[in-house]
Amino acid sequence: MSKICVIGGGAAGMACAMFAAERGFKVHLFERNEKLGKKLFITGKGRCNFTNACEKDELFPHVVSNPRFLYSAFNSFSSQDTIRLFESLGVHTKVERGNRAFPSSDHSSDIIRALENRLRMLDVKIHLKTRVMKVLTENLSPEETIKKQNRRVSGILLENGSVIPCDDVILATGGLSYPSTGSTGDGLIIAESLGHTLQKQRPALVPLETAEPYIPELQGLSLRNVTLTIPYGKKKQFREFGEMLFTHFGVSGPLALTASSYIGKYLEDGPLAAYIDLKPALTDEQLDARLLREFENARNKGLKNATASLFPAKLRPVMMKLSAIPEDKPVNEITREERAGFRRLVKAFPFTITGLRSYNEAIITQGGISVKEINPSTMESRLVRGMYAIGEILDLDAVTGGFNLQIAWSTAKVCADALSDNNRSS
Image 1 (cartoon, rainbow, N blue to C red):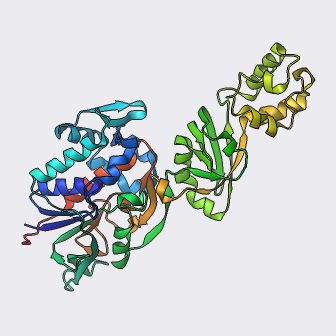
Image 2: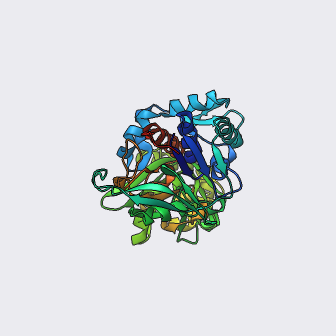
Image 3: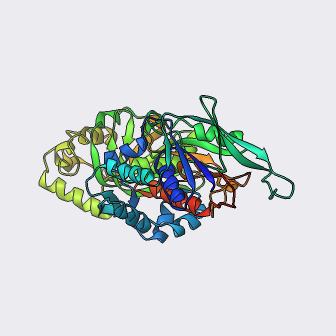
């Protein structure tokens, strides 16, 4: 019976340890924290949006980096499989807007407890407060060498100096986001020491910092049903409808978080212009007709008062400032050109994005182990036999809505399915 060492007690690590133990493997799970699932506990604001209940073909468009790599994983273990899994573990689930799946209790602890109970039932050896420093390898014989694989796993080295022999190692340590939960990049260092290429890491699903002084004036203002547009790269643009929030440093909320995953690497070349369509349901002609109606009903009032019904109170002073029209100018004196300029402002409220917030605020990490060096059907390293990588440590990431956790579950399952005893003894 093979001895499997799983490094990392988060979503991917717990799931893979469970799936492997169900196949009869002797599994040891190593977690540097004092408990399992520390990052999982805070996901979905503590409610744990553990997957997205869409059809498996709909999963791929929501993956930002390397969606094709996940073809085998998603087809082997879909979001529907995930829901059935947790139901079988005693977690009642529900599906909300956008197909987001949650435990019915709205408590992430139910997901963690279900996994942990199953691990203990399967006699998985859980090692808490135990940091793995290195994956040990030995050379393969010439007959065993397969392409670039000339080494195989022989064990792991712990921080206290102990060596744990094993047949296979699964790296499931996550990325760098929320370092307070233990995501400090240990697995990335281990992978690089084994010769793996690391794609540049950056915070993703993270708020955006902006340049203009009028943005902090809007702090606390939430906009719904708006369209955010950000041109980036060569003739690319992020354009999406939804909600966003102004903060003291810039913008946050679903639109900003999603945008960060697409524009992050382009911000390394400099600031990016961004625009909000405050009235996306109206064409320019319809907006002009709306303005004329408002002006007709308030012929002797200034622009600020005449447009009171169009914008939230906190936004109106900024709109007046950017319009360059005196706020007390009677609307019956506003020229056609001034009205056209005001419409452009409404349809393209401008600001400049200067950067991403830190890993402390990032939901996930973008970048990681190059997927070119991982077999997508097994999650095994193409460089070291018996070394596997799953979840966020890989150069895989998706938008919000439960898709990133589905990557964790799916890669864990396909990895466990691929483990082979090969008649090796523990």
